[in-house]
Image (tube, rainbow, N blue to C red):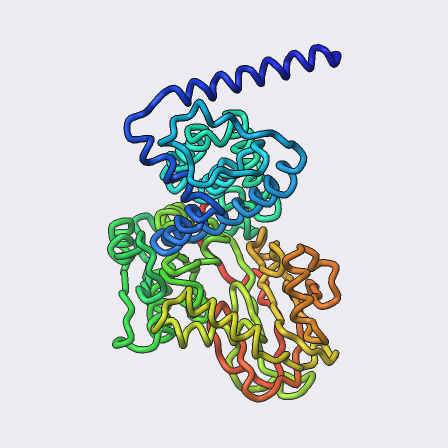
Length: 506
């Protein structure tokens, strides 16, 4: 196509764009003159979407939180792309405001390039990001996003093509983000190999312990009642502190399940699931994990997103083998202590600032709420904490954080987000060094996405890890449960030791 034809096509598209803009300007919709300008203004700087995201986090349960995080991240990527690249590359004047009724005019007319629409990009990115985690939230947000995008034309600050291209860029940003952080629906099938497990239609032979204090998700207000409806022949035990410590209750439940040739079930957060590992191993029963906590990392990595997912796997006898991370006390640099039961982890083990953060959050959360406690705890740790000194595999290190995952995790920056496999026999070890200015450098490189190249952050995937010389008063966290750490410990794995139900691959 020669330059003349390209010019004619550009002129034709521009003319059509202006005519469509003028048609919108001449037409009036009932109530729109009062609503759309205010809606458009509320979306300035993403304020509308940040407010909606906060609401999703507060009331949306596990899926709402995941949808909120992905939506905000998608918005951030779209905003950076549009405002720093696209608007600078294409300079387009704003539409003539004369044809738009004065009642629709915004109090502050934008002065940046008209092309593309940043508001439309943010609206589309936020909505698509949420929809990738939860179709329900996507459906709720779609009319709001569409109204925000249309308001930019209705108030006379953008041509229709600005809005269309902006929305496409926003959707593209949400899609691109799925590369480093795939949504749950795109997660590869985890936890090989498959293994036979008792099929328990209607839950016959299942003894399930429900810990209602693990989380407060709206969809799990009465998890025990839902389980009874889904599995009418199961024995459902509602746990509370009056019946004894949770490990003892789980042990009795596992013994009962073994006598019936059935399975042990647990409904709660990752800490509750962790407490079920020892009873399941001791009595040789498979484990049914049902999400009932705040984040439910282990259940989500298994593909058990809802109670119904787990119950369907139980009825069909669909199960896999999973590794168990193990922590044992050392009496010397090379010798295991003869006494003391090991600690287990299904997700993660950590030393350093993370156990400190968990302790502060648990201490302050009853007074100010979990989210505020986490934010204030992080601020205090960044301001006042000191590196932890210990020997790691015989090498003296100063560390802000030592993380060991049960299996190889994929990450966004410094944060591990998910596993493809849970029976790979490996530990995913990451160490954030605590040298001169290491805290500042680590934060800067994490924000820049360069952790794989920085000298203050190291990663390896060994089969075992030996840590000695830990100071008195050090704490460690296994699946988010914080306990005092011994001066020396050995971290390894029990490969394929746990049989756990999970839905069959689609």
